[in-house]
Length: 267
Ligand SMILES: NC(=O)c1ccc[n+]([C@@H]2O[C@H](COP(=O)([O-])OP(=O)(O)OC[C@H]3O[C@@H](n4cnc5c(N)ncnc54)[C@H](OP(=O)(O)O)[C@@H]3O)[C@@H](O)[C@H]2O)c1
Image 1 (cartoon, rainbow, N blue to C red):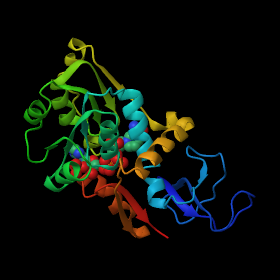
Image 2: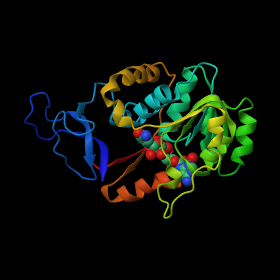
Image 3: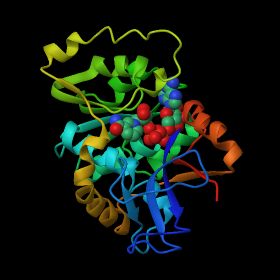
């Protein structure tokens, strides 16, 4: 199983990498990895001084880049837009909402449970939240987006995507980032029944994969670091421990037990 990881160099045949350096690479579920600079989707990156492994694996890693490029390149938000985010209390979703706020948008998040919804409003600064486990999502989108939404950043798919598509604004954009509600499905999942709303509203729905943006990673990292330093962007990590707990930790993403970027420490 592939896993973006930060590790410590214990042996090196490369002049630029010394024993003790902290490096990020694409590893697997393993204690040790042989990494070569320039190889693999993420190559081998030395952690800049002052950047912790937690930060590198969350806001400055795949999660931060996904939120940044997915929202700004595919969603193309403009100041004053209403941005709706599903999986909003997750690591990607919570950054998406905060970046949209930085860009002057009104942000509505959809998440599961009162604790996550409270955290989104009180700590992450979302304007409104919908608890999909306890509220009627369609009715609440109508309530919190009286002028409909301009960007929908979807991490979840399924019934939440379908409910959102009932409130599409003219020329709005759907960012298809993920569809976690269907990742463990054992039968084909029906598509949204209301795709014609995209036609009527001249809207665009587009999937993307962050790997396409890796050559531009530094653009995002500069902005993300600046926003973290200025206190405009907060990030949360959820660190479990122990190699034997890897499968159970992965499962936390599907049960929603994680609050923030799910990480696991094995060393
Ligand atoms: N396109 C790309 O390049 C790219 C890159 C990275 C990640 N992604 C996608 O981005 C999404 C978020 O990933 P992440 O790593 O940031 O994880 P995350 O959001 O930190 O964690 C996953 C969250 O999904 C929610 N969830 C799980 N099952 C659900 C269901 N049936 N209905 C609604 N919500 C459900 C849970 O939150 P609640 O407690 O609120 O239910 C859970 O905390 C995933 O779909 C992932 O595949 C895409």
